Image 1 (cartoon, helix red, strand yellow):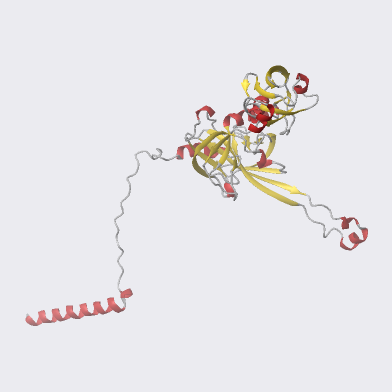
Image 2 (image 1 turned 60 degrees about the vertical axis):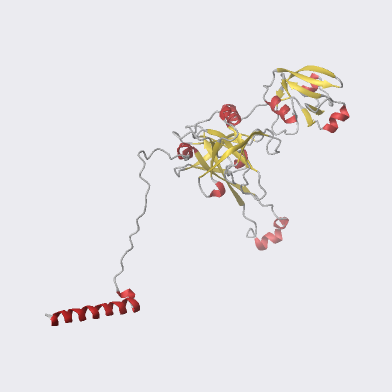
Length: 383
């Protein structure tokens, strides 16, 4: 019995020695054991369709199918070199050296506003385009035609031959306030549909020199090249603006983006769909802002109003007796604070209607009735 125990002890000792040597010199010979790590997982939500607190996925889910990608191409005709008119030159070289037409491509975004195929976008997205292709959220692509455009507000309406499209829901302009959360949806830099988040930084931005008629929503939601014409939506997925421009020194987002309010966009859109163009009032004057220096020079009590710098001969203003040097104070009873406000008030009037204009002439107040005319296209300098 003692002998058997001795053999067992020696065998165990030798086995342990061999294991020690192998584990030290050749550990790869030994079978590897997988380490087991206990991970703590969050419990599955009771209702998977319910968004977690702070998420805006429901708003994005509602609006994403209504935002499209717009691809444009434009043919650039190269000028013909005078040498190609030389018969000797053409005899030797023929047409081989004559340049081929080049094409520029561009991209932007748009918003489906009607199940029948109407799409709202920026005018600068489709300006001078020879071919316009619209790609939907589901990957289908259609050729688009321009229904009408309004360069002075930078809006345009396209239409594609499709039906039962996911039209976006329009929000209420009056319900938007500074500090509200908004989402910008578009196709920045052509990377694909993208959603960014920010807040409404300001309302009623104007005097930016971007468009003739300006009433922008300012937001810090990231808007980059390719986002133009895309949707700015509220936390319920409703359209509140059309992304239009950014303030940037580099071409990328610096946190200052501008969108056209849905109220303005809708009014212009309905006019374009109904008549193919936008009709605005016009009286034919050129105005300038009243600076403190001008107010002192003209002996004005304040710098409110718009100084009439010029009157188009034969225009409604000329017929009504408005003169250079007059200060326009009110239009149809509404105060004129500066030339931009004057521009907006007159543009909102209907052609052929008569409207009361109140002016300061020298040191007296004059009221005249003006028969409103129709604003010519792209006359940003005159009103």
